Length: 185
Length: 389
Image (tube, each protein chain N blue to C red):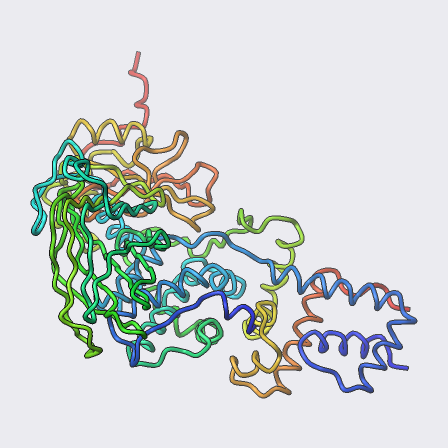
């Protein structure tokens, strides 16, 4: 994770001067929004809600910076916040109720053949991922995005032991969904 | 010797956590003698790699616009919605594309294009250009921290955040007088003009900090370059020192160039009467009951026919093309052929144009917009039955 922290070099004045907030936030947005969006979409199947969670994550960053608390490791901070928002998805679904102008409710139509899920294996993995509980999906994807087991545990607010079990079961379950272990003799 | 299930569990754990040496050794022993488990381990590694590579493509520009608005201090923002954000994007893109006003401290811009006469009379001291902004000046200097900075170095780093027009910038950074100097311009705009609403420079100290000038600078009409002379005094809002400080430009031309990130239609169009501008409450749009276009049948037409009809009515329209199964929205001046109108909106953009959503006919969103049942005439697109013989 530390090597990817270097993706965004953001400096901000002491105590989060309000005039420095926008450049700092947008710099971090530019550096991390796409990977963060994919992380969220791996867990939250509905593109509109995923979009709201992405927005909410950066809005919280804005608030944090305005309070003079620029995260030491912004990428990790963004993932932690997004993970918590997405795990607690039900509460934040109320966000979508405030979205203006949605006369057609297409939230129930997740894209089964998203252009960007190129390749059959990726599509299969994405579908299999959807069969896992939300916290298991989150843990797997945090790990996939470079977080260590300990960091996943911290992000999810669980003990390391519980997280170890969670991720292990998730990996095994995912493999089973994708065809299971080879015939074992 | 551990069994298959234990080996699989140990391996799944080992991808994220360190195993105890004894557990590691047992796993390795098992894998050495078990081709099936080795295959399974390889498959789990492949699963992890695929998870790493999942990518769902670009994020709609509206998300960034929303965040930019919130970050600039216009409220927390919240989920403004795609259309509101896109409206803001459209307004500022239009601001970058259209027409004519007096710049503060400068000469009026020319509707025929940038006035480069002054700049041509002498070599420009600076000529900075990015994909979205161009600035030239015959004279340029910054005074800060008791020093004068002229950007007299070829090593000026020029950058723009193209933003979504809610956050277009021109940012210059260079070393001079033994310190780093920066000049940032932040652009704003509305349906008729564009301008710079904030100028920042570094204070000339070894650890540079920002000095600010907020207001309306370089104002010009849509599509025009600003030309003229400008002296801006900046203030030390954060108490970091360096004042008095100012920026001096003479014989300058500043242009906000059209962005390729999104393409709102440039200029023109008659505002749709009598609807409230920008975001009208749901149910009060032009196609809602009581709206001027409610019974027009336009939403039941092909986009091309709808465009022609709206053109005849003098109503500007900007198409919102949902692509990639609604995961991305493109702004189009004309509807791509073969697309169909869907019932997401329409809304009124911030410059008064209609924003009509369209998709490819194969999209799951491609559902015909029903003709309003309360309209006095039938759907104009339904072929009437043949007359009785």
